[in-house]
Every structure is written in structure tokens, then in C-alpha cells.
Image (cartoon, rainbow, N blue to C red; front, side, top):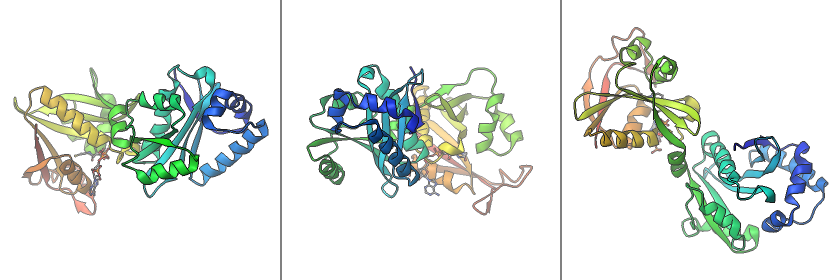
Length: 326
Ligand SMILES: CC(C)(COP(=O)(O)OP(=O)(O)OC[C@H]1O[C@@H](n2cnc3c(N)ncnc32)[C@H](O)[C@@H]1OP(=O)(O)O)[C@@H](O)C(=O)NCCC(=O)NCCS
């Protein structure tokens, strides 16, 4: 089973109308009985709202390309980095696992394309099936009405009835969605990703085949690499870690550091070392936010690189080593 999300289009109007007119869906959503022209009007309005950056509405297609429902990010607030999610599936597609797939596909957009921090999922209290479906999602935080009272009262005003409020937090979602996978065999194919963290191919090739190389996956997608090399029986060095540019700054690096250090601890290591250039201001922040402390400075580490490296207007000369006790 694999769903695809596509942009709204009037060519889906007939199918959307047929599915949303079934009483099980219509009653759950509180929709009035309408004609296909109303659905066409709705689709056109949704497209305008998307162009204005207010919503990301998507039609859910199944593996055969037939319309099975709709899922949308609504009320996108770029300042608060949040939005609300609304979804429905045609009655004949209930209970088949499509909900998790469709949620995952739309939350990938919310967190990795829009860079949001949280997505609220409300449900009318009378809509038990919707609440049960949300409860099954492994990355949901349930009953957050007291944590977000303004969002909750806004929702109840909008729906004109009592509602429950749940939320998908980016941190939980990233944890659910990202994983480390050991690379067995040839590592040559990962050179482009490794070069994101270390500009010199000569330098990367010196350690390419040492230690353990991990792929960093987000769902099925390769979004980065990490390479660790044991230094002693108790110390291991994180020699290279890189997230592909589109996925940087979305919490993946932080989560992967957590998973990696957990893995190293399980393997019996007590200390993780990592080095970064004096010019890598963002990385210096990144490692410290992840609990690393400054350990040592290797002066002129980068002076011998074939090409001088500049970042933030600073020449990379010295390597700063950070360490974390496990
Ligand atoms: C370094 C790298 C692996 C981090 O992964 P990432 O997915 O971008 O990182 P995250 O989004 O998980 O976290 C970045 C953290 O650094 C913080 N940060 C980044 N730049 C910062 C700055 N200039 N000042 C303060 N904090 C900063 C972010 O705020 C965030 O912390 P927070 O979530 O607690 O706010 C990734 O950006 C990358 O691949 N860069 C290119 C290759 C590279 O430089 N590798 C490291 C070589 S040492």
C-alpha cells in the first residue's frame, strides 16, 4: 500500500464529491448536502488559498491512482510555525491503514518542506472514530487542550461545539521518521554526502573505509550520512555527519546525534569526540546544544588543506574538538 498526494484539480471533483457525499463522511465533517459544482468551487478556492500560502490541500490517491480522500494543512501560521490538519477518507477506505500513510505524507510536507514546529489535529468530541484514528498514530500527543488553550478555544469557536485537541510536534515526528542504517560494502556512492561536511576529497578518502558508515534515512529517503571511527576501546570519533541541504535545520541532525550516541553507548563507548572548524559557527552551536563540551584545539589542522576554506567570513584554520560523556 502506498498513497500519493497530489494538488487539488477539478478533474478530481466528481470522485471527491461522490466520496464526501456518503453520509458516514458528510455527517462526520458536518458538511451540508451539495452538488458537484460546490466541490468544483471548493477546489478552486483551495487552490487560491494555497497560492496565498494559507493552506496546503492535497488529494489522496491510492496505489492505482484513484481518489480515496483529502488531507490539508490549514491555517498555516508562519510566525508561530504551526498549522492545523484536516483529513477525510472515503468510507470504503476506512480501517485499511491509509490514515497513517496519508498523515505521514502530509506531515513530511509540514515539517520538512514548510519547516513548521507543530501541527494541531482537532476533532469534534462526537466524532469518536476520528479521535480513535488519531490515538493510533505513533507520533501524536493527545489531549493538549491545557497546553494550547488559545488554539483549543479557537477550534471550538470554529466548530461551534466541544472539541478535543491533539498535536504532532516536530521533535516526535522526526524521531519516528528518521533512522540510522549501517552501510555494508562499497562506500564510494556516499562521497557526495560526505563532502558536505568535509570539503576535501583527499581528506575524506583517508577515512572513507574506516569505522562504521551509516545512512541517515527519513522514511524511505536518504537524507544524510554519518561516519564513526573508534579511537580507543572507550572513545569513538564522529568523523563526519551531514544532512542534505533541503533537510538541514529541521531537527534531523539533532535526533541523529541522539540515536548515534545511544548506539555508541550500547557498543560500550564512554566518550564521543567530534571536531569542527573554528569558522563553522553553526556547527559549534549545534554540538553544544546537543550536550557536547569543548575538549581541545588542534591548531593549523586546516592550514594544510589544498584550498583555503572560508565560512562566515572566517578562514578555517584550527580544529575544535568537542566531547560528550555517555
Ligand atoms: C551540521 C548538520 C549535520 C546539523 O544537522 P541539522 O539537521 O541541520 O541540525 P538540526 O536542525 O537538528 O539542529 C541544528 C541546531 O543548531 C542550532 N543552530 C544552528 N546554527 C546556529 C547558530 N548560528 N546559532 C545558534 N544556534 C544555531 C539550531 O538552532 C538547532 O538547534 P535547536 O533545534 O536546539 O534550535 C547539518 O546542518 C549539515 O549537514 N551541515 C553541513 C555539513 C556539516 O557541516 N557537517 C558537520 C561537520 S562538523
